[in-house]
Image 1: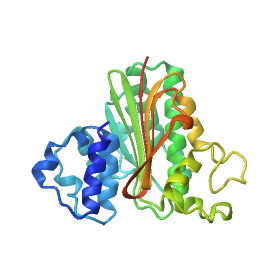
Image 2 (image 1 turned 180 degrees about the vertical axis):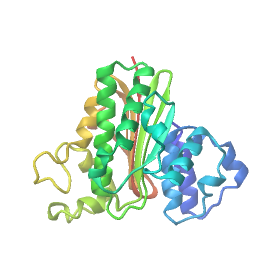
Image 3 (image 1 turned 30 degrees about the horizontal axis):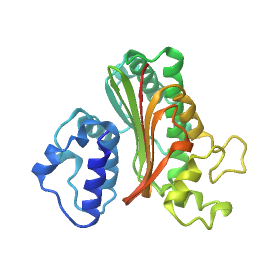
Image 4 (image 1 turned 135 degrees about the vertical axis):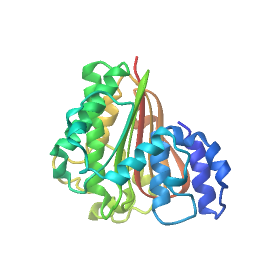
Amino acid sequence: MPFSVLDDLILADSLGIVPDDETLKLQPVFSDIGPTLEYHIHQSSGSGSLVRLESLPKSPAVLALLEAEQTGSTSVSQRSLADLSARRLEVIRLSVNVNDLSDPVYIAFGKRFQAAAEKSGFRTRIAAGIVGAFWEMVDNAIIHSNDANIILAAYQASPTGIAYAIGDNGVGVLNSLRMSSFYSELDDHATALKVAMTDGESRFRSQPGRGRGFRHVFLSLAALRGQLRFRSGDHSLELDGRSPSLVNASLHQRAFFRGFLASVQCQAD
């Protein structure tokens, strides 16, 4: 995943350095859905001078994002609801109400995601686990983003693997945690990211069953090779390897990113 290119673009943007259009068109960052989604959310935050999605080269990832932003989550045809076959790439704009996830639009999206994972070589049980972890992250984004006007989710299949990404331009991990009196003195994004990844930790930590979303992500990648990136504030938390876990995570300081983005890529055996 060319996130290193994206990090350079966002850093340059934060420093007021405007890349020319030709430079942007040459970047491989827009071939993968994770970096493309992160770019779009950052650009849509209203700061900086990066070009809008409409002005980017029309890669499949960019086109899918444009379609999702134009149609939203409710303007889906009945044909699309009935078609549950695997797709290579799909993006959906999410409602801010977690109860809406029972809508047929989302159920059909999830079934196509699982079909795509199975077509990429994952056994049915493993594919179901990957899709289940994805929905946990979706639920997490809706509950914790607060005041977000963009919440997007996507998957992208390849012949040997599957990737998914969920992103929002909400309050971010640190501010979400600080809504709890338990974390009110937390003051840096790096620590906040690591706390949020820890099983059972969230601003609702006193409520049974809360804070387990990231646990499902790690469990879904047991015995699989995965690449994960979690982005919020001025840091990213990244993992790469077989059966990735928080133990081997690395934190990296980045230019500021409003909201939260989770990007997961895994390879079939």
